[in-house]
Length: 405
Ligand code: ASP
Image (cartoon, rainbow, N blue to C red; front, side, top):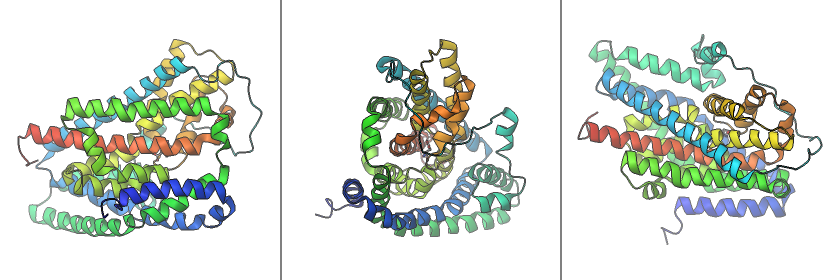
């Protein structure tokens, strides 16, 4: 009985009941949306202390700069390879199914449109550097916070051992306390998820999904293929572990990612389950997961490539191979630049549309289903991060033929 009523199963039941609640009682679901918001706010409350503490202890807990370099290189190689695989898969699946070809352009939408993004190399690089770390902390600017914490931790490797230990113990204690807090909040997941999903369905109903079904199905099929076959194959061949068994251990995190549509809000849970249930060393999880939640978004990258091609189809624009290559490159960077929050992928898409000369207003054509697809792509984003952590953990264990890092 306890097994049947595990938190993961309760969360799954809450998702299904939440959809029914939002569909049949939209007004009630919208009125009670604040309960889901409370749960989300509680999760978000933990993000900054967990990111700072976990990255700090991950780096200073390693045996030295060489080990950090080795894990860092593996992490970036994993992020880039899997993102590239995701975008390629999106483009291939799109070219096979070709949704929306021959359709005429629907009329305008009443949804507010995201503002076009500008991304030059200079703004991209500058966006990493916090000129004022306290401003970055209060604004919750995750990428600059990560950048600062990594440098701060690397600098700490060079200070006197006793001082280094003081700092390590300080951040390690913060981390432990945050993990206890995370467990308390995670216990509330089924309630939070029920109201979050209820409000999402209550707001737009299920009609948009039906109207844009060929597009939505193409995205979902490609996401399923990436999350169910491509990523597990990487895990199996590179990490040499059973990815499906690992999924069953950590499934609470993708479920929460699905319900919140936010990789960042899911981060406290991802770290918790990777360490306690997935057996990932905390120095690897503490480094790979916060970074991954911010820059490794396979689901988003895949989704953007399909969405842009779909928009081109609806607009009757034939995209050449070189334009598809441009999409490949910009979608990769757009997914790196997208924040781990709901709808971030949609905002970054303006950048890809501009790169191939499509008007950004065309986003209006797909905005109605964005939130639904966001839930699925976020679940794949988080699943990709968790697999990455496990793969790098197994590689490091094998490399050092033991548990010492
Ligand atoms: N919601 C996604 C995430 O948090 C980002 C996106 O909009 O694609 O991972």
